[in-house]
Image (cartoon, rainbow, N blue to C red; front, side, top):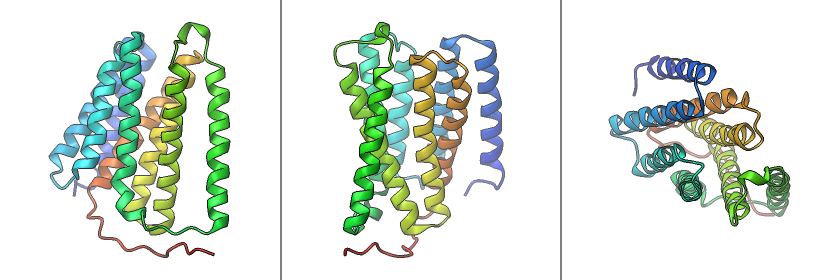
Length: 232
């Protein structure tokens, strides 16, 4: 385990540094701030030897995508960045998949999940439609839909995980997953819709999410489910 106040202290320092960079510097430096933050999280997971390889792989994929983010205006870097984040979020789902794969849902619960997924796809479609033409290229929309679908899957998996175990371990995983998704939504609004103030909330959610996953990695994962959703 990390010392009691170590992670909150690191989160506070990194947050303050990023907020200062956002307020005082240009987009390139903002991206460097994100890259350095991800690199620090990656180092903490490596340092925490008990961290599982799947989680380390997910953060490594995010780290590589942040490197490519420095040249995001290049179509090829842009495309690979999307693919790496899709892979990272898929890997985050796989981190908890062994613990939720036996989940049994009722027909009603399946309908609710399907409705939530469909509504979010509809919202994603509306957001994509708002992207200015200057950012558009031939398969951008396709990548956005895949990326959005993976994010929605991550959210549903995290919520299911929290409902099954409802403990500190699942809380930090769920907080991490949800904050990363919120961060991406804020980043989308800041960059594509050009509301630059949203970089502050983007970075806030990103750092809280990443640090939450580091905290999640410090638990042994020997928890027992509170209940199992039964079929009707």
